[in-house]
Amino acid sequence: MKVLVNDVLVERSEVKVDIEDRGYQFGDGVYEVIRVYDGTPFAMEEHLERFYRSAKEIEIELSLTMEELKGKLEELFAAGPFHDGGIYVQLSRGVAPRKHQYEEGIKPQLIAYPVPSKRPEKEQQEGVSAITADDLRWLRCDIKSLNLLYNIMIKQRAYTSGAFEGILIRDGYVTEGTSSNIFMIKDRTIYSHPASNLILNGITRMKLAALFAENGWTFKEQAFTKEELLQADEVFMSSTTAEVVPIIRIDQQPVGDGTPGELTKAVLQAFLQSLKEERVPSV
Image 1 (cartoon, rainbow, N blue to C red):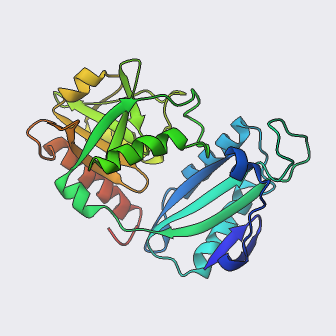
Image 2: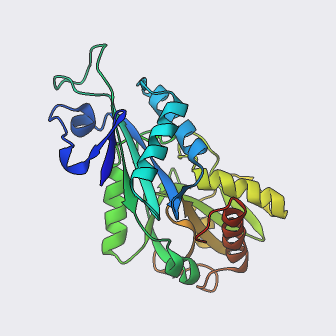
Image 3: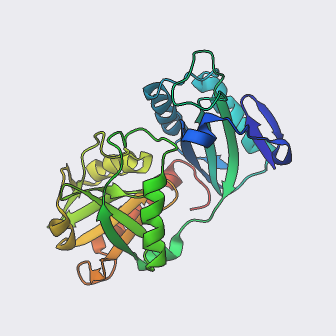
């Protein structure tokens, strides 16, 4: 399998990580996952824009322009052939002696490689369960950084309890999932936490916001409490890999009647239709 290392495609077996890479030692870097459907990347421009924004926020400058990186990723697709899943793209600050501060002149390290995966069709049709947990992450969740330790802790807690996702609560308000954005529906109005430093503004979330407007569905970027979440008519999550998945049980309590809701199913269908219109061939 080919891997992009900085600006060169190499075999994965040839890739080495220096023990003093700051991404390895400190999580000092950023990443993106770009969805691929039957060899076609989805929303690459949006993902790369967020990738470069995240890098700028932590003051890492890529040696490649966005257009150059896009071209290199297209070379990576062609070298596959790669059909379904995602492309993982990561940028670390680079290799330097291990200390918290760093000197100028460190060369950032870029890698990208394919991650095969299937669409979560079973979960989309049947719905999933979730747990809630306190949101104890740092206050720059809008940066897609490598620092995911707390997300991992809660995701693992959800997994070991038989749940699909962990929903994070900060100061009584729902922020997002460990690896997703969370939406609540009450009285036919769709709610999601405002896009601020407390959440990652998901690419799928932004696509859905446009679809809500196109379909005349009322959408409010408005924070809601855990209590409101538990009394919601419907709840669903969105992400690059999950697309749109109904959440039918939270903390062992059913959401609505405990089955995927009608508006959630309509949102999913609208999203899948939008993929077809963008010529994504496998949905």
